[in-house]
Image (cartoon, rainbow, N blue to C red; front, side, top):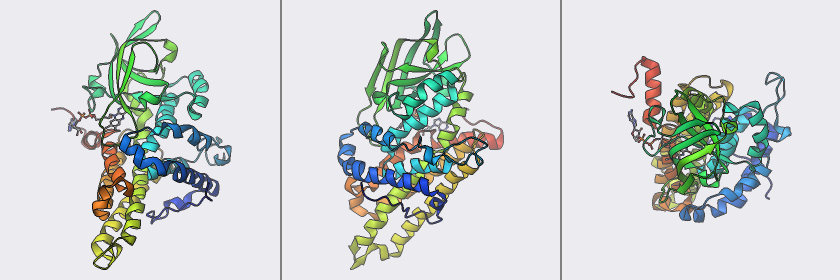
Length: 398
Ligand SMILES: Cc1cc2nc3c(=O)[nH]c(=O)nc-3n(C[C@H](O)[C@H](O)[C@H](O)COP(=O)(O)OP(=O)(O)OC[C@H]3O[C@@H](n4cnc5c(N)ncnc54)[C@H](O)[C@@H]3O)c2cc1C
């Protein structure tokens, strides 16, 4: 492995300067691992739509989230030793700086799945499953969206859970479920039959009645396999239900931090796209000089860096003022996705015709930004959430 260094060209306001030396060293090791092992295979795997699942264990072995050296001073965190939120954010940023699919393949487990278990599980479930979640021996994904219900899934969910003497029977269908075919467990959200509750079950993926099929021909996050899932008479014991999830309000509570974390992902992708674009601009010559010397190219580079500063400012704000409501994550998500979409398009422009070739990197970010624009709530849905909070009027339906 090369000697670890950690620079963030494009972070002009120096948000990364607040990382502690041990945190920087860990992130530098992560970058060195990614550059040496994952970066060289990205183009081929992206083209073939091949999963990056084989990198999960090596990433777990880096102990990014469970290294005692990285735990903060207990005085700072109210007597508890924790990872600093800034560092956790930079882990996501660093993965996305390489590739969004790498981040989802790793973070879908230690971020999304783990967050759900911690937010919804009993103390016994958390104690039993958490070590396996961190070392990837107990893997999982999150199944909420349905073929006929995306934005309106809260009101229209058709997957049901029926109570029986043996536990629960789940029937329905889910769509778009990331990491479903590389996970041992699927957290299935279902409406309680004959009741008001919305429940979540940690369903072993091999349970009879569960059928997973990868959605083919995807043009974004190609190295993440998203699946259609059918659930026909799937029997799940009560011990596999997450007892602290009983409504959409509970799911939103669990998802607040995840939605706001999009700012870290979007910042990482913009930093990656910027690095590729500025490097290309320095070496590509037209009209007898590097295109980096043209004002119109510099304008694009500056706009990307300004977008990065705005996105990082949002991300860092979440570390100093933890999210305690359902509205601010929507504002953060929609602004971050907007800034990302503009930046990756500018980066793609700078690289000209070569910009559509995968080997110049910017095209991956460009395509993957479209996925980020849609998941964790589309721009419209997040706008409606903020708009309702501002005005007191819901504009979701006529
Ligand atoms: C790459 C990818 C990964 C994903 N991963 C997961 C996952 O792991 N788990 C999971 O559960 N889901 C996942 N999803 C699903 C994602 O959450 C949904 O795609 C998203 O909620 C939007 O739903 P939809 O695609 O059905 O679009 P629709 O809800 O059909 O929306 C279509 C369009 O209509 C707009 N629209 C809808 N309602 C309104 C309204 N009231 N007013 C104005 N405009 C409106 C939307 O904003 C959108 O532009 C993933 C999706 C993608 C693309």
